[in-house]
Amino acid sequence: MRSRSIDLLRAYAICVMIIVHFLENLSGTREWSPDGFGAPIFAFLTGVSYRLWLRGKEKRGTTSDQISKETIRRGLFLIGLGFLFNLLIWLPDDLFTWDVLTFLGSTMILLNIARAMPTPALLLTIALSVLLSPVMQRIVHYQEYWVSGYFEPENTLSELVTGFLVTGYFPIFPWIALPLTGFLAAPSLLCLHHTSPELRRIWLFAGTSLIALSALLMCLRWGTQWGQQWLPAWTMFPATLSYMNGVVGMVILLLGGLHHWIDDQKVVQLPSGLLTRAERFSRYSLTIYILHHAAHVWPLWIYGLWTTGEPSQYWGQALSSWPSFLLSIAFLICCDWILKKLEQYRIPTVENLMRWLCE
Image (cartoon, rainbow, N blue to C red; front, side):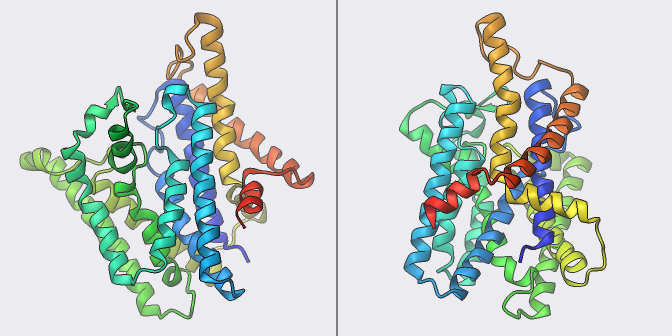
């Protein structure tokens, strides 16, 4: 049985990502877009969904070796899909941008290791991945890899490894903290395995504390001269301590609260049409992620190449912000219709292909 709280959160995340990408890629706007709030939810829910998938496999008596094989195949599929996505959607120079899909594939392989780790070791890994990231960013001179707000590495082995680990759009450090936290917190937040209410309250308290810590850091940074010099800003690129504390706490509270109000106690009754669309967008989130890029990036490349001979000529300046925003809403409406047709005619999607190849 699907969790409505997970479907709502994942649908929200993919919708936010669509709006952000249309605004940024077509108009260069980040000022009032919901930038930075879609990807953390998506990453966190990867860990949550893996925990639920793992629970279902174990209930059906699947061996640990078979689970490892299927997990690793899924991870390799997503990494391969990520490189194919970079090749077909972006220009050839951006093959190794280490974007969402390559991160999710790497995450699957790391989650296969995480499932064998004791809870204290996982907590330590999560903490170190966040706390060591600023140090690693400083050591490798993070900003040198970014030109005009975009990741621009050289195609050398050392820079490719550095991009994968630290400097890419979604590097392992610190982003792995989100799926690992989702994997670890899922049984308590979703009341699996008859977990105690006390453990659930501990996770909710931890989420609240992380948000409070992030807010404190930001207040001290804005309100003091020494804070502006020494405390981290709230930025997604690079993902700072303030940002990571805030988004990790946010997603813990969102999942815990939505599950309690919608799935468990059913305090909030949402329209059936909204729930149906949320489930649809959640179920086909990978397909939507690829489609929405093709829908707005390919026309940008084609028009630039046709009019000036340079594909990226109109990058970030093709439209003003409001037409870009309205186009993103139009895409969401069209996407809902397309997904209905995919279901109606049983047309294979990326998700179907992954299950067919990996299970």
